[in-house]
Image 1: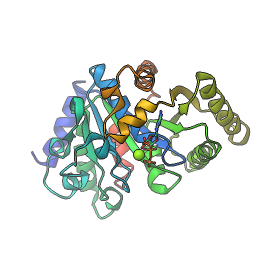
Image 2: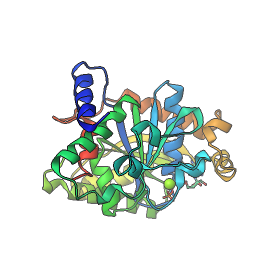
Image 3: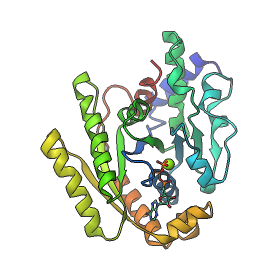
Image 4: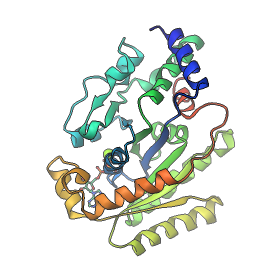
Length: 289
Ligand SMILES: Nc1ncnc2c1ncn2[C@@H]1O[C@H](COP(=O)(O)OP(=O)(O)OP(=O)(O)O)[C@@H](O)[C@H]1O
Ligand SMILES: [Mg+2]
């Protein structure tokens, strides 16, 4: 199938309402090591239990996070789709419970030599992911670098993970500030939902959110939402240490149950309505300029 034909099929399918756009969540943090990859992988398991088709897109170009947790090394990356002649389903590695996994590779951010037709074709090609998943989880890197922010800004929904550690909360604030700092450029600001990880009680989770949201309110005059907390759980640490996923090896653990509740809450809330362009199209179009 050539790109033009692919494009026609996407438009046809969309007109016939055969394919809905998947929910897209960027999972991000200000500080590294606060639990993004665990959130991505365990939420993916929870969504699979709800019979949703899930793909994790690993946009953390530095570290091979998700693949370590999956124990599978992907053979291809997005690069092979963009520059090579691989079809979209071929670059998806299948992990536990048939969770799809796409490695971003490093090609995505250097696609500036395409003409308009090639760009449109490519973006529509990538939009066809909507036929393959109901939920796309993007594991971004940490911090306020442009590459992280680009993914955050492109995603309709953002899960910002922090721990109760003061430096993690401060760095989470810096990321929120950077996101709202792009407000003036006229771009759409994503919904930011905070997840407090490694808490010792629900009350500590509430306190983390209150600290963060009060500075966001006071200094930026903006709002962020609270999506809940994940307890500090030795069973999760054990699972990670043996390259396993806590929701699989210890589904009754407190962290696995909390991830399941979080997934339920996320499905229960309505996403911000998209404007003219659909979520996936907008998501990829913002990288391929
Ligand atoms: N709820 C939890 N309970 C106990 N330990 C946790 C929890 N969440 C994360 N950890 C610990 O923190 C470590 C880092 O978690 P994870 O790899 O998910 O973070 P990350 O934000 O993806 O890190 P990076 O920024 O390096 O990609 C894990 O290996 C685990 O030991
Ligand atoms: Mg990670």
